[in-house]
Length: 577
Image (tube, rainbow, N blue to C red; front, side, top):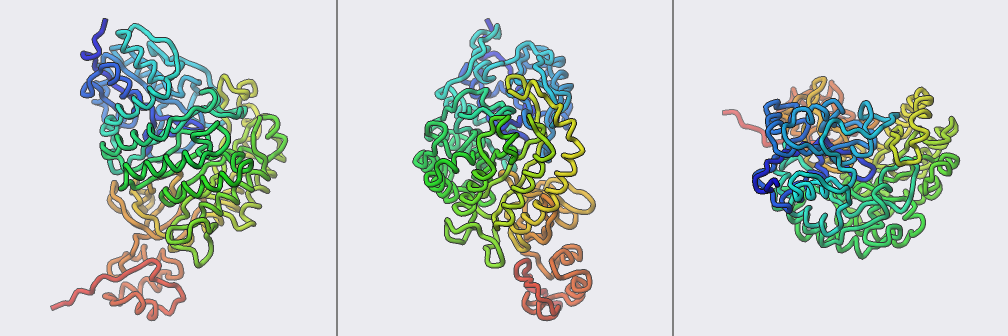
């Protein structure tokens, strides 16, 4: 019988991406935190628990020694929705096998990887369950398996799901492990679980495999935020649920009182938080219960931070595809939900709440508080060429009505055992590859770019943009939050630092910006040229005529209609002796 107090444990985070759960850096999912809490609850000392991300192992090969020497190796990972990632690269199957081969002690694998493994982490793929040479695979909740495995002296466990009380206990007890994340503390956002499971049964989705909706009480989530705050976390996303509006109710109808208790409680224990965002919101909830939904959205927008996104799982605007795949919302219902979120949440800081959508030249120069994002999924059963036309028509109607979307997410299906899509697999996605690429490009050009200009016009300020990488003479970074804009800044600036920026130009899903406020007395030619309406000639005049005393004076000298005060300032001129 192995004594828990003598165990050394290594946790490797291969990252997760599920329909209602995200854990690719700068996000950290609930899995490593709950698992660490389960270990502690089972008697393993905190100091005996080592946590690594898969990128940490790639960057520092000596960390593999912790994999080799641990009495218990725990791998956590799995991608059940495809995506493209900037902050980290999810573990590939061959890397996961290497972990099992390297481990000298007992090895256990868990998380959404239990649903299946493909050849690569991408869309239009089929998956199958594999053990990837691990001693154990947790087919229930990995944190429950870990607790039971340690309790048994590493002999085994029964696959089971943890209950709400265990989740609450382990969430608090495992908060300490975030201090071992390489992004801690400045560039780390913790995914928070309010509940899991789903009342609906869409053909492709793995979330119903967690059962009917069950919710953690507000006090449980609030205590977790308090514990994470004590370990230096200031950024949170309430992302681990299928529908935030249904939180604390019957799993379908909104419960504004529960949302109020949750959000007010989080703000009370973390008054200095820097990010409070969410992820999933079911548009059918808004369509069925518009008044309660509007109140819930109002509460969220009152307490969140700007740039928040409510992801809408429309998946397809084609009624044929909707019926074949048990999709629960029609295009008309989804459009009405878009209108309501725009009204209740589409206002900007400094404006009157509930007066959205805030657009045009009089809009405040910050991102709106809460906007919908649209998820579209291709390769579903009965998809046809007309499906693409239906989707384009829906998006165009949203734009033509003067509404805003924070982003449009276009993906191809991944087929998992246990879902209705398992029989169809990726065959439709493969046959429509060329059509899909053409359509995706059309959405980017005709919807994404003009929508982004409406959402974040020139002069919009983004605070605390974290600088991540250099490319083509520019520095790229993002804010922490749900679906943050990729920001390109002229010149190469120190990575791993943050700065405020003002937007000057727009791509399809990214923006160009300059530091805010940009000092006209020290700004580079590239930065000055990037400001709308300035150009190289006027930028050269600004540089030649330094030092400047006022922005207004520069505006007058340049004879331009551009209001430089939206982007710039001037430092006090230095007097030469």
